[in-house]
Amino acid sequence: MALPYENATSGGAALEEIRKLLTKFGCARFGTMTDAENGALIVQFSHRGRDVTATASYRGYAAAWLKEHPYGPRTRGSRADHERKALRQAEISVCSILRDWIKGQVMAIETGILTFEGAFLGQILLPATGKTILEAVQQAQMLPALEQGKP
Image 1 (cartoon, one colour):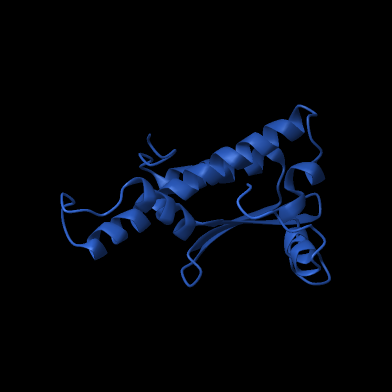
Image 2 (cartoon, rainbow, N blue to C red):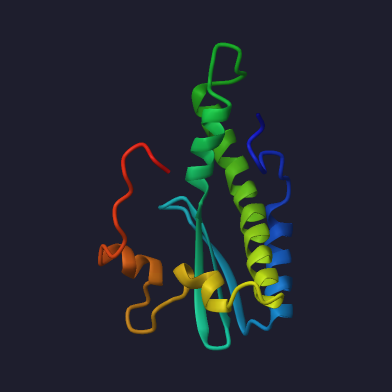
């Protein structure tokens, strides 16, 4: 089974599509950045006074890619080359995943399926702390722990 987005080829084009989509949606500010230390792509935007930060782990995607395409005796190149290939693809794929996720959330808002807060609740920044609502909820341990072995 193929990993979704493993054949994505244009990360920059996906980020430009996000910018266009959010501009059309009425966002006042938009920006992207790479957090190389944590292996993540960050998309930030502001909509009607609500600041949003969406962080996507390309290291997480690379781990999934390596699980789907494990290094073996028939793999060309070294293990390090194989891992670099996974990370390069992950950096591209995560852009497309974020584009499609944000597009889906915006469509849900525009069609009345979700409110803005409902669509982006976990990614909305709290003005007092600069943390996302999700980070604050996790830090306060407001969610019950998941049972081991269950998604």
